[in-house]
Image 1: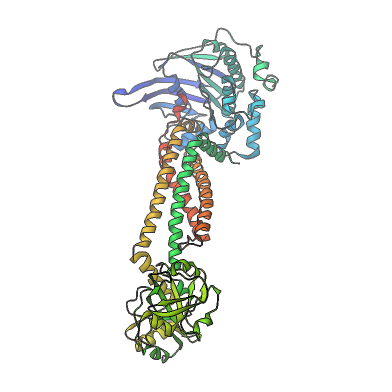
Image 2: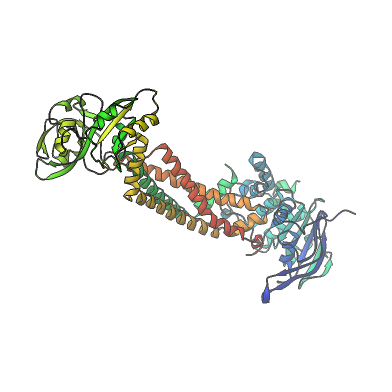
Length: 251
Length: 377
């Protein structure tokens, strides 16, 4: 049996202090395997984003264990968490979080620059990542000149350019219309086909269910259950060549 | 271009008005500091200009002399005693003192007389633009600087005036020999100086001592002090230091200049710190994103420091251009602002230090950033 890319065992997470303290996660256990797209669904305040923060090494759990490639994230210094994040995790945010002063290719290159990778090789890798999401023709565009869908695709390119083993996406389709939302999920599903990579998507959006390999329901800081989607989205959709681009479609 | 520099530059230029305010803050601060320090350098040079141009290995001065313009009279036998000391080649008398100059148009103005023997080494005028030093050997001949023409009421060689009711005739004209005290220097012969200053014959203010080549200066000084117990014997360096200490710090002029420079640096630092801090606050979400995608604290610090350094370079460049104009404008005035390569380098380093120090508050703010902020709307 292969080792999970990320594994959480009985994770508890308290947030805040004093009277405002909240138990956001109450013993969550899950494993993210390579080649899998996992959806986490649940109502607001169920602990989805906290779970994402813990799995993405942004928060150290109050109790329980998180392992990345079998290595515990507990007991390390904050610098160690940063390195784990840098080496293994790619984030996609609901509001894209692109730097408005940088072009698309520079936004993607930033993820390499923080790893100490610069120069022409980094530029080539960033352009290749943009090609993967079908945006090579917009490499020099600033975020303000891109649509929401395009910005999210740049954000996905930034998340994958460092070749992380896990992509954690927080409501990636939340700010997009139906067509762009489906295009983004198609890209993420395609990324998740790589057996060396796990993709976790937090969402409220029922339209994305067909893209999942499994769906985890979270409520009140606990996992209520796990299921397989009833209908699977065929990988190649009619809109894909148009939206995602020839390079990805023909890949 | 490294991505950090691109990011820093664009962060700065995103809010152009704030960047302009930052640059203006740096420019004013650096101009204030450079003018104060330029004046300080100018004063420092001016207060020692006579000592710098005197051909002396040692100065024999009255005990307690504070500066060149603070003369007392030596004993009239001191020259002969000095010449008797082993290792002394020359002991040239110089007489200095204030005298009233009757302005031809009416009224009087004080002048500072410098009398020296004309037929040998001494404290002679330099930067002569009309006439020559030998012309001062004629009776009542004087040399003045053309900067003071208007104030002294003369305009050319041959003009006659009265100094302490003694006649005097302009025989030579210099350019750029200005006094720190703003009292014009008047060069003349030793005999005429005694008349203009109003001392008795054979009285001198200083002895310019030349020692034998290869002689031990300290040894000669010791022997001079042994035969001249009522004087002090100073090297030119010591006399310069004493004059500077008196004019620049004894009178408070230097302290005022330094205080002005310090104030400029503090005001500049505060302005830059304020603008950098507000810029950083505006970009906190972006810095949180950087943290979330795995950047180290140092990477973010480098972005902020780069912003500070870009501000420093731009601000310093503008300030340097304005400084050049100020220096050019004041070059021919009584109070020129002096700029040396060393001072320019020091000012640039000050700008950099000022800007990096200003980045501290912004860096401290970023240290507290929570990368999970990136998940919020």
